[in-house]
Amino acid sequence: MTLNTDKDLKLYYSIGEVAEMFGVKETLLRFWEKEFPQIAPKKTGRNIRRYTKEDIEQVRLVYNLVKVRGLKIAAAREALKKNKEGTVQTVEVVDRLRAVRAELQELRRALGELE
Image 1 (cartoon, rainbow, N blue to C red):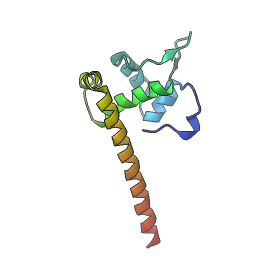
Image 2: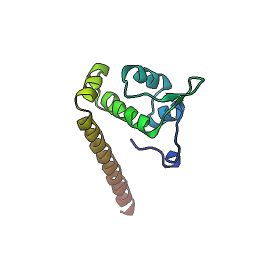
Image 3: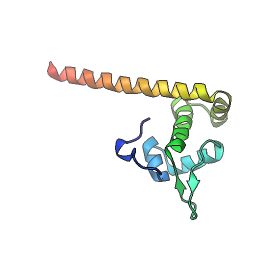
Image 4: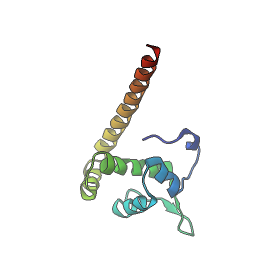
Protein backbone atom coordinates (compact mmCIF):
# COMPACT_ATOMS: atom_id res chain seq x y z
CA MET A 1 0.00 0.00 0.00
CA THR A 2 1.47 3.35 -0.99
CA LEU A 3 0.70 6.75 0.39
CA ASN A 4 -1.14 9.32 -1.68
CA THR A 5 1.46 11.51 -3.36
CA ASP A 6 -0.31 14.75 -2.41
CA LYS A 7 0.07 13.80 1.26
CA ASP A 8 3.72 12.70 1.07
CA LEU A 9 4.95 16.07 2.30
CA LYS A 10 2.95 16.03 5.54
CA LEU A 11 4.66 15.32 8.85
CA TYR A 12 1.54 14.13 10.67
CA TYR A 13 -1.66 12.41 9.61
CA SER A 14 -4.97 12.20 11.44
CA ILE A 15 -6.54 8.88 12.32
CA GLY A 16 -9.20 9.60 9.68
CA GLU A 17 -6.57 10.05 6.97
CA VAL A 18 -4.79 6.84 7.95
CA ALA A 19 -8.08 4.91 8.05
CA GLU A 20 -8.87 6.20 4.56
CA MET A 21 -5.44 5.16 3.24
CA PHE A 22 -6.09 1.55 4.24
CA GLY A 23 -9.84 1.47 3.69
CA VAL A 24 -10.56 0.60 7.34
CA LYS A 25 -12.53 2.23 10.13
CA GLU A 26 -10.91 4.43 12.78
CA THR A 27 -12.12 2.01 15.46
CA LEU A 28 -10.03 -0.75 13.89
CA LEU A 29 -6.92 1.45 14.07
CA ARG A 30 -7.62 2.14 17.74
CA PHE A 31 -8.05 -1.59 18.36
CA TRP A 32 -4.78 -2.41 16.58
CA GLU A 33 -3.06 0.27 18.65
CA LYS A 34 -4.05 -1.66 21.79
CA GLU A 35 -3.09 -5.05 20.34
CA PHE A 36 0.21 -4.10 18.66
CA PRO A 37 2.67 -2.01 20.70
CA GLN A 38 4.48 -1.17 17.44
CA ILE A 39 1.57 1.11 16.51
CA ALA A 40 2.02 4.09 18.82
CA PRO A 41 0.98 7.41 17.29
CA LYS A 42 1.71 10.48 19.34
CA LYS A 43 -1.26 12.08 21.05
CA THR A 44 -1.86 15.77 21.59
CA GLY A 45 -3.02 17.24 24.88
CA ARG A 46 -6.60 16.57 23.81
CA ASN A 47 -5.79 12.92 23.00
CA ILE A 48 -5.88 13.46 19.23
CA ARG A 49 -3.69 10.93 17.44
CA ARG A 50 -0.94 12.19 15.12
CA TYR A 51 0.53 9.49 12.88
CA THR A 52 4.00 9.87 11.36
CA LYS A 53 5.12 8.02 8.23
CA GLU A 54 6.85 5.50 10.51
CA ASP A 55 3.57 4.91 12.38
CA ILE A 56 1.84 4.39 9.04
CA GLU A 57 4.46 1.81 8.05
CA GLN A 58 3.66 -0.11 11.25
CA VAL A 59 -0.05 0.03 10.37
CA ARG A 60 0.83 -1.22 6.88
CA LEU A 61 2.64 -4.24 8.34
CA VAL A 62 -0.29 -5.11 10.59
CA TYR A 63 -2.78 -4.51 7.75
CA ASN A 64 -0.84 -6.88 5.51
CA LEU A 65 -0.68 -9.61 8.14
CA VAL A 66 -4.29 -9.36 9.29
CA LYS A 67 -6.27 -8.18 6.28
CA VAL A 68 -4.21 -9.43 3.33
CA ARG A 69 -2.74 -12.66 4.70
CA GLY A 70 -5.68 -13.35 7.01
CA LEU A 71 -3.72 -14.01 10.20
CA LYS A 72 -5.47 -13.83 13.56
CA ILE A 73 -4.30 -11.05 15.90
CA ALA A 74 -2.20 -13.36 18.08
CA ALA A 75 -0.50 -14.93 15.04
CA ALA A 76 0.21 -11.51 13.52
CA ARG A 77 1.65 -10.29 16.82
CA GLU A 78 3.87 -13.39 16.99
CA ALA A 79 5.01 -12.97 13.37
CA LEU A 80 6.08 -9.40 14.07
CA LYS A 81 7.83 -10.40 17.28
CA LYS A 82 9.68 -13.41 15.87
CA ASN A 83 10.70 -12.17 12.45
CA LYS A 84 9.99 -8.50 11.92
CA GLU A 85 12.69 -8.14 9.25
CA GLY A 86 11.31 -11.04 7.22
CA THR A 87 7.78 -9.74 7.64
CA VAL A 88 8.81 -6.30 6.40
CA GLN A 89 10.56 -7.80 3.38
CA THR A 90 7.55 -9.97 2.55
CA VAL A 91 5.23 -6.96 2.72
CA GLU A 92 7.54 -4.97 0.45
CA VAL A 93 7.69 -7.81 -2.10
CA VAL A 94 3.91 -8.21 -2.06
CA ASP A 95 3.46 -4.45 -2.56
CA ARG A 96 5.89 -4.43 -5.49
CA LEU A 97 4.17 -7.42 -7.08
CA ARG A 98 0.80 -5.68 -6.73
CA ALA A 99 2.21 -2.59 -8.44
CA VAL A 100 3.62 -4.70 -11.30
CA ARG A 101 0.29 -6.51 -11.65
CA ALA A 102 -1.62 -3.22 -11.81
CA GLU A 103 0.80 -1.92 -14.43
CA LEU A 104 0.44 -5.09 -16.51
CA GLN A 105 -3.35 -4.89 -16.29
CA GLU A 106 -3.21 -1.29 -17.45
CA LEU A 107 -1.01 -2.27 -20.41
CA ARG A 108 -3.42 -5.08 -21.26
CA ARG A 109 -6.36 -2.66 -21.25
CA ALA A 110 -4.43 -0.20 -23.40
CA LEU A 111 -3.52 -2.92 -25.90
CA GLY A 112 -7.13 -4.10 -25.99
CA GLU A 113 -8.24 -0.59 -26.94
CA LEU A 114 -5.81 -0.54 -29.87
CA GLU A 115 -7.36 -3.60 -31.54
